[in-house]
View 1 (cartoon, rainbow, N blue to C red):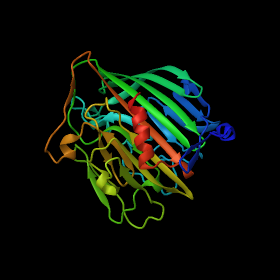
View 2: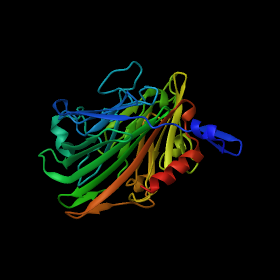
View 3: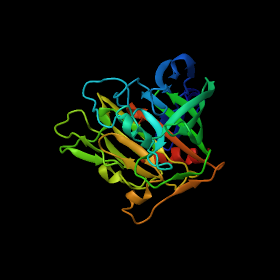
View 4: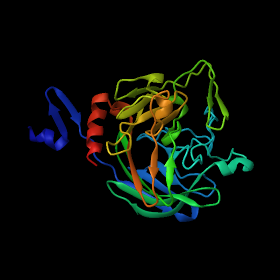
Length: 345
């Protein structure tokens, strides 16, 4: 190969040339007083890990692409004109579940009246155990999955790894849950890794949509003329749009335009995760979730998946989130390669 091309970082395969992207420095800055950790990539804000006592779970919020455009919904922690205000428990990127020992961790939020709070679980961050800056940024923490009386059901150890280039951002999340008492994840729709998308990445819908949770609470997502929403889904199995929901796949991506820029967000499952490949709880109104434990509802009752842990037993979940913008949005072939690479981790 021509030495000049090597110097430029250009790789040629046949007639195709692609410019190799240089990794950008990741800066991880904790602020214990504010119960947050800020992550910057290439000198630009990327996201923050938020774990105040006022939140029912820790979250990454907001999340931006490499151009600095926010790709997560603003509500309920902020207000952006046009953003929907349904499902107040959908905040940035989170990890929890609808039915653990009968407690609903997924749907808990400030909107639940005090008289009903006992039906809901809480994830309380105990300690940020590691922060590291560099080519790959690291953030690790410990948390407890508890009832309202703060009795521990699960102990959580999570490690985030952040990386990025001029057109890409990657989040690897590795979470190990250890039972502090016998723990049962009852097959349910709402779980496990959730992301609430910015308005533009929603799929346009003309009709109102009604969604009922496990306690009969109905949420209406308004339809109508929407000039901003232009998103779509694609799975590794070739499912698109609304057909992605309830199907299995190694990966799923949502893509669309935010302003004039093309943006895609892919979630990649890991072969060592329970019930691989995962089911996609991907809704057109902006909920993008991977839930391996919702088999009963996703198969219309044909089969179900129960995960139980005896006291002291553990389970680990690994996910990769890949955010691209501009000409760097990933094709299906590129995502298959990314998934194969992640599977080695």
